[in-house]
Image (cartoon, rainbow, N blue to C red; front, side, top):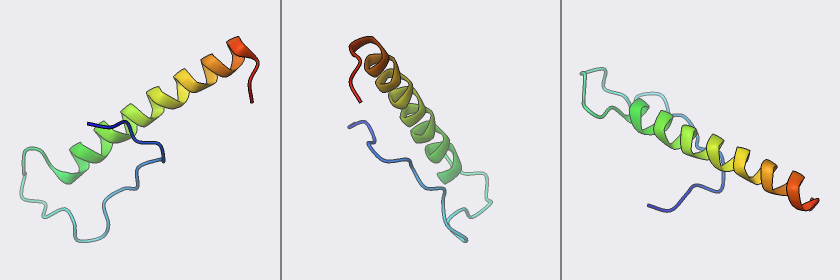
Length: 53
């Protein structure tokens, strides 16, 4: 799976059926958000090390 380059957007109104699905659309959103946050952290570290902007 490709790493997201833009911040994931939360599920829209009505996308979650509140039926206890596994995985839920919210589970997938939070997983993608976590990957994105890690990616941003790595970018910041690389930028600080190399001095790039």
